[in-house]
Length: 280
Image (cartoon, rainbow, N blue to C red; front, side, top):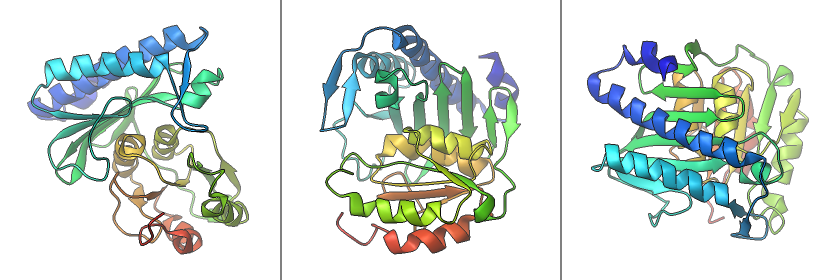
């Protein structure tokens, strides 16, 4: 917890406590994920390629126990247990992904994280993304900047899409509806220096915030996939919108995040693939 103490000094007492709760929960969940990582996994399929493991459940249980104990007045939206409508929420709510990158985790790939955000009416107040195996803690409070462990971070200074390293992902129904993603993927590959598809949107966004990726786009994500990451990007100097350059919330069907310098060029490629005005 020492890694957040300097940052907390910039915050009022309420946000000091809330950040402490979110980070404590993320670290507690991360410890569970580390302990289970090398063990055989119990896997259940929620869809043809959408799965959940015993680690998702154990991580979420640990997070919920802590946040409900410390902040009983705050509602919760969590991936594995939430009965919330994921199209919108109005009250102050923790938005939790106990294990983003479950498929990676189940296959022994170390690209996965815990993601915890705090939503309030119409914006994200706080975001935490924790990589257990790398022991990298990304966090931000609105108006206070973004940090990785104990240092401030910023988005990259890459100004050309041609020189940019981007990230993306595919929705779980990609096999049924490949035409929703593959044309955009092809167009962006031809414009960027490189595109990575690693399988954890919260981490992709954290990497944009840290300048490791220059931009990211994806469709059909859930609020817990992007809520924390979007604040990390914005507080690190980046921009987050939909494909048509409109304001973004975690309840939209698509996300485009960048270092802001290449944002217009990414919009030019992606705007014709926007799902915002469709029923997809």
